[in-house]
Image (cartoon, rainbow, N blue to C red; front, side):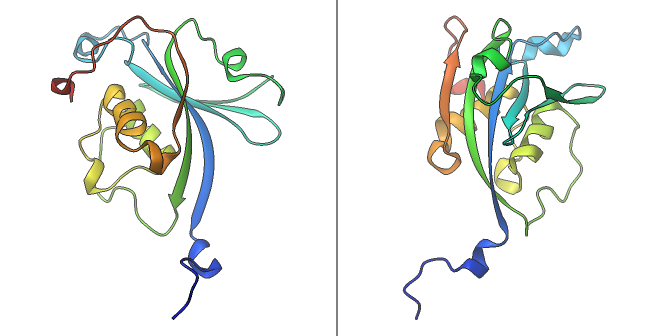
Amino acid sequence: MSLLKHTLLEEWQYDYIDWYVIFEEGDMPWKLAKLLQPGFRHVWAVRWDGFNWIYFNPRLGFTDIQILPFGPKDKIQNVVNTDHCSVIIHVTVRRDQSKIRNPWPTLFTCVEQMKGLLGIGGIKTWWIYRPYQLFKYLYLKEPKYYGTKKISTTTTTTSTSSDES
C-alpha cells in the first residue's frame, strides 16, 4: 500500500489553468434575452499565459479570440473594459484530459463554450445553460473545487433567490 495519495503517473491526465471569467449585460437584440438574469446575459474569459493576455469571447454567430496588447503588470480591471462587466471572477480549473465532456449534442451558446473552456461537463452539469447559472455553479456551489475568487463587482443589487435556476 502506498503512502502517497496521488502518484505522478496518476497526475499526467490533469491540466491546471487560470481564467478570468467575465459576466456582463451583453448586447443581444433578440427577445429571448429577457429570460436571462440582468447583468448576467453574456459570459466570456481572458487569461495571462505567461507572455500575452488571451481574449476568448464566444458570440452567437462566431467565437472571437485575440491577443490583447497588455503586459504582465496590468491588472485585470485594466485589461477588461469594466464599464460593461457585472462580475469578474478568477477561476483555477483542473481539467481532466481522459474524460469526454459531453457525449451528446448541445446548443452552441456562450455558456456551453465557457463550460468547454473550463472543462465543465457531464451528466451533473446538464442544467447549466444560462450565464447566471454558470456564475452560481462556479462561485457559490463549487468555489473550493475551482479555486474561485471574485475580483470585482460593478453591478447594482441583483437578486440571488433560489427560484432563478
